[in-house]
Length: 282
Image 1: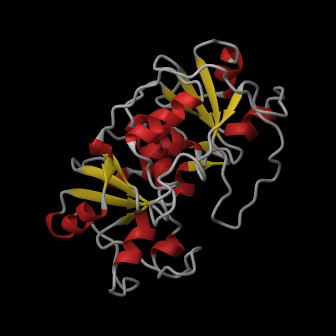
Image 2 (image 1 turned 180 degrees about the vertical axis):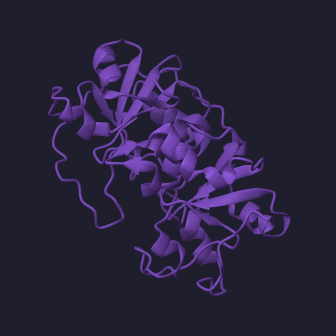
């Protein structure tokens, strides 16, 4: 184990441990990049449906965090218990799995990890695959205790324009952040939240795995002496969790996710933001 990551070798050796719960959190990417081979399921996996189940269905924005009670009941229905060690993976390597890792952290569960390299790394080792998911017969005893400090709301982002109490890091591509590329959601304008910084999620990954500690230290070099809370944003709250996960390996700052991310911000803003410049630490 390294921080909140586990290797495929570690999981292979623990695959039948009764306390280990394996969740497949694969979703389709918003970008044009496709999964080259999405066949196969890691043995003993349970499907964790981010796009249709584990979200607030009443929210006008995608991927919104479900209520504490809803999350607790849904997780119990998967047969998950308080003392379980949860390993989350996806078929892209590392893409949507950090979102599930963060959701469990937000809801107070400490023993949750992301499989470094995901399904591609598992298959590269020649480990066996299954054709279907498992389903536990018993309801779990999982209990949630939400940590509100790990979740940032739109009103807090607006207030931060003046107070600058925290630093916003945007995980979208540089082209989207700079307003040079159209948003995947056609109704959204391009640009960035004022005074935010850009660390594309691809900058912390290497062929679907998390980069080395030395490489991550370089990626986050601007924030080594930054004591403020880091708030991570992206298009709709998925890839922000990748960069947050990476930051936990090299930075000790308090951290949070702006759940509405650019989708909520751009929807709520009437000003043209494409000309706004990214921030600086001065």
